[in-house]
Image: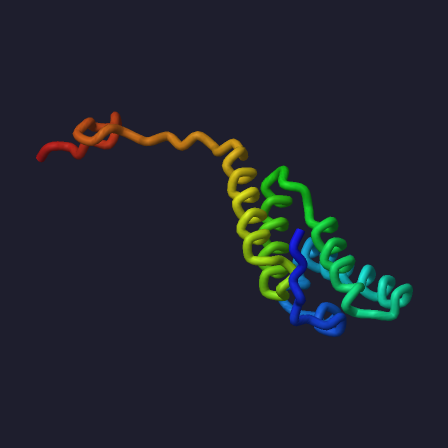
Length: 128
């Protein structure tokens, strides 16, 4: 997997913002921060810490099953794209996978209504 040098700092991920209102995005960011800080503590080098943190972000993403998880997965990918956690090709594959998962969700049947030209019983206007 190709690594991308992100433009973010750990402080950016800790700042409150609208994206962090989504618990799944907040969980991914928290996983990134914890992995980054742990690897930085062990290695003392942020160049080595970032790939581990990016992997932690990926691993924290919700599974692609169920409407809410798929929606949250997309939110995590979108946020990861903005933060440059994902390489563009990887992000495209992740979003394609989410589209496929979304297509498997059963849709409610929609009654098409009456066919054109046919009167619906009880809706006829009285003649004068």
